[in-house]
Length: 414
Length: 141
Image (tube, rainbow over all chains, first blue to last red; front, side, top):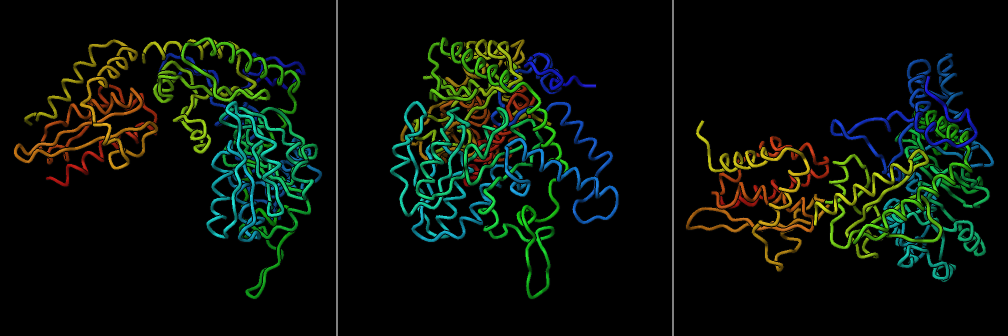
């Protein structure tokens, strides 16, 4: 039986680590893995892995249409998963939890339903720190319909300019689409304030929570966003599953996204009527197993001592910031006062690819490159950064390993 | 089967790398090789000469010497490891007839463990580099 950290309500990182089998392996034969690429994807606890196995071993069946026992079990598990996610993000109803493939599909869903109703000259406001998933779908709408994209600038430290955001909102603005936590800089945006600013003008807001949900439950009602989306795999869940949450009236008013099974009420060759939420927006056989796995991940995180977890992540951020700041020629990219446990770095004389390659050989897994935020990198004048992103299961030893590996890489490369 | 100049050069590299006992010294050597690459003129660091598919920037220029029927290569990269890889490939292919460049194989990269140490994305970048050099060679063969 795997140990389950959830049994204790005091956050104990060593106990938590025992729940994650992938953390306990060597890479390149004999080098212990130090996994610091959590903003890209997190590792999975044994309970999630086991839940997926149980589904395939005992419950595998299609949902919603079967009259047989297994189908009923699978349907129950799938709809229970929706309930677990509703609970995790404090959505008012299950119907407001739409399962998608992830953040990217969620934003595309909004762009292709809500967005398709916009007209030429309407404006969508985004920020300079968006990742490609919150840029490209709007650009595609710009090409299709002729909407305008307004991009709110950030400071050199990576802080969003709220005055500029306020000024960007006009009667032409039809949506503000903003990242909750920047994957490349770690900046935590004041999304409640942004929502308030937009709502003063009756402008809906989409919050991209891909990087916020891994740090503990999020309250979508408190944030007040009209849409909120995230991916499962960054919060200890499986890949290929994510969520779009929406305000009830907003989701009800959306036209279907994909046409097919499960999203219909009645179909004839003349006419089709559509199912109610949430099924209207979930055409075809859904990703049943991974939705169930995601629910398991949400319960796992919720059962942790979340205050302790937050303190631990803050400690990792502070300690990492202090340790890497001592490395000559290395600067931290993104120094907003409100930051998640993401440390993006750049050497003044070394390419991130070179450093990342050496780090990898030393067992330290970080991200190098533009982090799917090419316009942000251009804004910062960097080819990319080295990004260490910490999860709650990382330790100060991991930070030490990172700092030591950075030193070694710099010595080798200079 | 008789060896070719390309085979001999590749074997030379394999022998050189075999001298180094661990991955760190091999990387170090690769980086040093990058310092010896015949450098492309700054003026040619344009999109036309850029190898796309690499995370770092790489430029390779090919010139054909008709009188000798050989190709010469020059290159550069803004990343040292990539530059070292470019230097390896150029060292093997430089001043060879277009047909030889076109048909060259690069098994020696496996033998020195370079492919194993590169992520698939970087291996794709390396493959793109080789592919582009061969495509250019095909124009003269």
